[in-house]
Image (cartoon, rainbow, N blue to C red; front, side, top):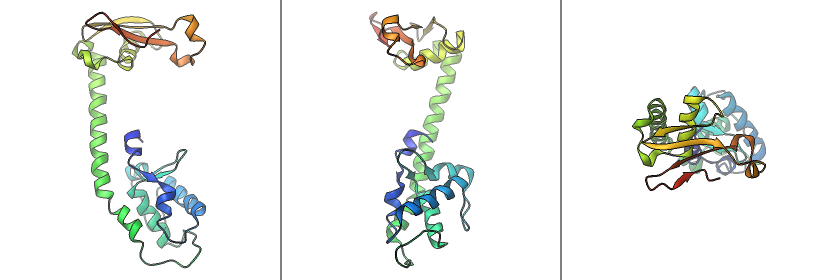
Length: 198
């Protein structure tokens, strides 16, 4: 799940707490299992909905789609409560009602991501198509990897600029992770070095 989509989810425990008298931890366990399975007894999520319903990270996050799954679990009697259940859950239902807006936001974010991927592929295939403001260490790394292979040093022209990937100097290399030992940099129109600095 893209970070930009995760940023639009709510902490699962705060959504669970919209259910009065809920036992939070067992409810989170039931929700997590149903979300990972992609279904409850009365609700089955599509593959895409399953991916968007729940994010299980350091802080579990839930979308309106996941809240709909939570409500299904509640109505099925699979959410442990301290007191008898109520028929109405207005706060939870209000969050579920934002599903259409959430889906619209996700569609926009996925379209933007696809546009970025397509542009990256286009530039990797033909670096002359890049604009100088698009040059980044990430782009240089992708172009040089495509031309010379993973972790190879080299120089290519991107957007008419000489772009380089080289091994970090030995004195800084000891402080870096193995994957960070390559530096990607370029000289801008004024001849100043940009990107990863040694």
